[in-house]
Amino acid sequence: ERPIQWLLGDQLNPELDALDDAGEVLLIEAHGFADRKPYHAHKLTLVFSAMRHFRDELRERGHDVTYLKAASFGEGLDAFLADRSDPGLRLMRPASHGAGERLRELVDERGGSLELTENELFWTTPTDWREWADEPEGGWDGGSLLDGDGTAERTYRQEGWYRHVRRETGVLMDGDDPVGGEWNYDDLNRETPPDDWEPPERPRFEPDGLTRETHAWVRDRFDTWGEGSLDGFAWPVTRAAAREALDRFVRDGLPSFGRYQDAMVTGEPFLSHSLLSPAINLGLLDPREPVRAVEAAYEERGVEPGAYDPADGDAAGGTEATLDAFGDDEGSVDGDEGSVDGDEGSVDGDDSDADLPPVPLNAAEGFVRQVLGWREFTRHVYREAMPELSAANQLDQTRDLPPAYWDGDTDMTCLSEAVDHVREHGYAHHIERLMVLSNFALIYGADPAEVNEWFHLGFVDAYHWVTTPNVVAMGSFGTDVLSSKPYASSGSYVNRMSDHCASCPYAVSRTTGEGACPFNALYWDFLKENEETLRGTGRMGLMYSHVDDKDDEEWAAIRERAAAVRELAADGEL
Ligand code: FAD
Image 1 (tube, protein in one colour):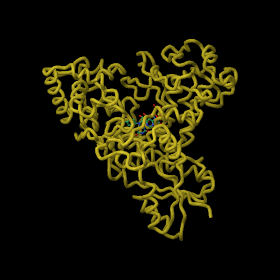
Image 2 (cartoon, protein in one colour):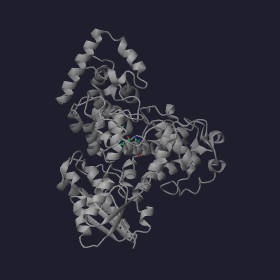
Image 3 (cartoon, protein in one colour):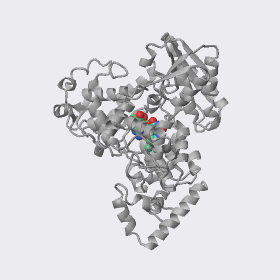
Image 4 (tube, protein in one colour):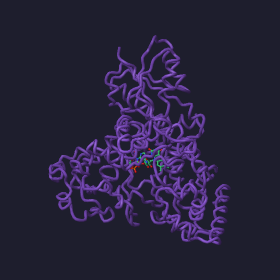
């Protein structure tokens, strides 16, 4: 008897090994979750449209698909299992904590059985993780990783994991060494573009009939948040479109990805980011694909770290020079080959690689680290640190998120830009997420669980397994399990990495008094407030030496301004 393969809404890949021997495929569109909270309209449209397209694609490929719409999985299973005797279902282990066991119970209760298999849509397995995690430090016995106040029994750092996985997979490796000799080129990835630089055009995937129909149903059926219309909805909802999005990124975005990765520009939500997280998190792309595509692009078009300036379009140092110095594989760096048969890696098929801008190593390595390093890392930390992780709050922060997070109504240019990007697109890039949205919430004192929920509802790529480590641990410092210090900063970071402060009515140069940048007083007040937890932590020494330099008068003014900012923010008047 061939198994019934049940696939969840974030497992939408028609090329899964799990489908090879499946006799039947089950998809349950359980939409009760969207009745309970106001999700972004684009997020619901994306998920349900991608599921429906996937159903049609599997049927075209000859699979026998049962597609059920239900309020809950239980209700869907009632319908599916009603007239079957002893049905055996198989499911790739869900990414969400505890979901595998919960679903198994639901199936058991209805007289069936559920086998849980490895989730193919992550590159590394829990066993791979344990092999690494136990090796270098040992110690943790697999019991509860976090205690009640968020203190981690043991901590993990992404960089070590990343190097391990690079070695194991051979990605961007030159024998035992990283290509180029360094593991990390982030010191080259902190520039802001000049005013006349234009980011690559965002690939747009126009909604088809099925997406329009799904969107109309979403709007009619649910209370949603964010941009209601389909204007501006450009996300890929099929595997073919996701593959095209990847090709377009590798062709156009990758060359400037590294250099401007941390930059923020008013009116430019996307810059050179790949915009691939929605597709990867739905399963439309296997995470190996973007990593391998970027590696291949580096092999074909690679230049030394920093040797390409997207702003003048010139490869400083020239392609040949670089390739001699950097090519780890001679065949791949010989620009004649591969450049003429353009059907690989290029969307139009007739572009030769010779016309494409080069890919500096800092861009390729930076991208690989995000997917192979950070994405896999957060997933494993989540697995180990749940369920405590979602409630972790070592700084005891309890304030409600200011209303500006919902309505975007604030004079702060950086915050209103970032919130508007989320409202409009269900997307903000990494630095807006980390250094504006979660940084402000952190130093304002917002409850990490509420911040997590806000991200979860508003972002098209948000799932519990990925928001929780990013928002609760990294962004809110609810626990030190994955970073040794909080990502807290004053307005000077935003000023350095963006053009926002020039057009902002608040003065980034001032900390106290009316009109001073709200980030500044909140930042110092946050450090003072949390001194007991933070002074001895990680790399906070320098910051606390500045805290120590301030006299009582300065502190009084800081406190006063911080209190005023908090009040204005809570009243929606910031
Ligand atoms: P790019 O900048 O092009 O990066 C490439 C890819 O790297 C991404 O597509 C993603 O797959 C991966 N990646 C990069 N950083 C991370 C990370 N820290 N964790 C996991 N994957 C990563 N990512 C989500 O997928 N869903 C979320 O809901 C989410 N919420 C976040 C909330 C906060 C507070 C922070 C700080 C980060 C969050 N991230 C989340 C991680 C990261 O910001 C997004 O993956 C990224 O911005 C997605 O846009 P992109 O595809 O254009 O990314």
